[in-house]
Length: 120
Image 1 (cartoon, rainbow, N blue to C red):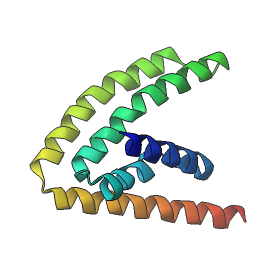
Image 2 (cartoon, rainbow, N blue to C red):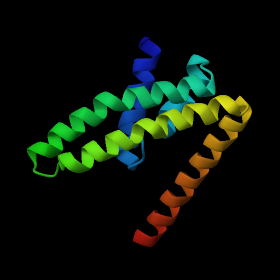
Image 3 (spheres, rainbow, N blue to C red):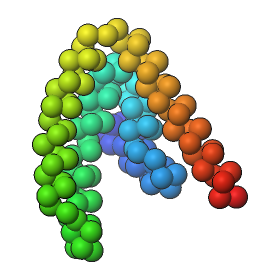
Image 4 (cartoon, helix red, strand yellow):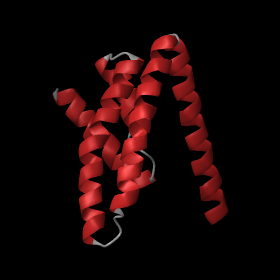
């Protein structure tokens, strides 16, 4: 448990500094350092988003940036999306999930490099 907390905290700090989603760092940390299966690490990362999203929504509401109707719509649409995602990930080999996640990480990295070059 302590390892997961340390990985989550470190991933959150680095993700906040780089402007990426924490799961991009949290999932590999859970797989590499805590020996979780890819699917379990992704599920843990998604579960960890819930309290972060609630705190973020509360803070943005304080600033007047929260739109309850949009939040409700997004939340309701996430339910069938999550169910569909579980069905897909259970139907494909775990190695395929690992490769797809690695491709996502490469895509995010390429976007970050491209954006940095455009700004610099």
